[in-house]
Image 1 (cartoon, helix red, strand yellow):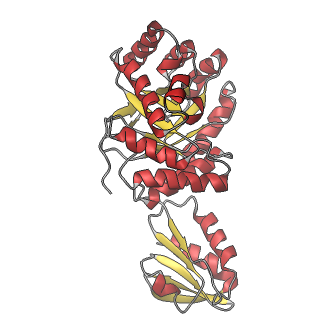
Image 2 (tube, rainbow, N blue to C red; image 1 turned 180 degrees about the vertical axis):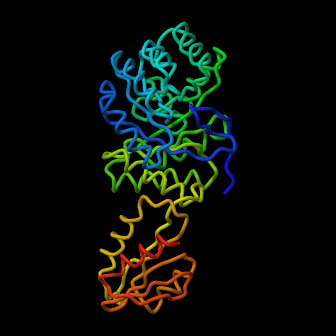
Image 3 (cartoon, rainbow, N blue to C red; image 1 turned 45 degrees about the horizontal axis):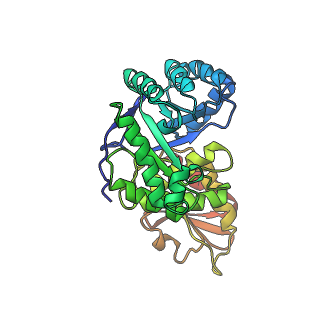
Length: 349
């Protein structure tokens, strides 16, 4: 699908929008004031494939800790700030690559001008983040509750505040835990602005439920060419957010590198422990950078044919299985050695 071309924005050493790739973001859940622990988590997230990381900045101590954090990672760091413009100014001074702050919430125009001027001098973009749980009272009254139209109007009000002080390095996110409302909101604002859009379903839930909701919401928008950067919000280890986000982008062809893994759902013809085998293969390949498609199929009769487009795969039989490449059988292996043999073949590809 062809992406809607938005304005190109630079975030540290990464560009979003324009013709640049869709990036994956996450947020640390460490105490930002503990710079060493935060850096440790950032490195793990980077190794998992995270492109941009956001850190909460609840107070001045956290803003000051950003100096050490930004000096010790090459990943762009976004300071997440609510209400206090002084935290934004301190974060900029301490080397962050972007701010997440809503200008309408930081007070008088003079404060907005100070933040905008400082961000402009450092070429730091500002992400406006509108959330269904924090809509302005007047909009709730106007629209008789939370709606896509209310969320978009709120975002546009914040955009106008920044544009009125000659600042336009803007990224927009409009998040809701209601997936349909989230989709409708992004579709609506995509017609009104050309700023890059940061996609996400807020408060999506636990890893299982949150993955489903995020995949539907983000996937629906990507399928229409909407979205420049994504964050999967899960109640769990942030690394899971990155893994899910990257898998969503792989599904749409936005990430070409790494293993594409497919497996059949099993049926009455399955005579080996395919669920165990599939989980083991997926686990052992999760850090592989080989750009190949791997299939784990339960049936020796149909497996190689059904997964003919896979570069390599397993088709299970009774106590044994076949290893095949591009639909052609290359060897028969006992069940207990299937996974090891498959991994050996992949390592030699």
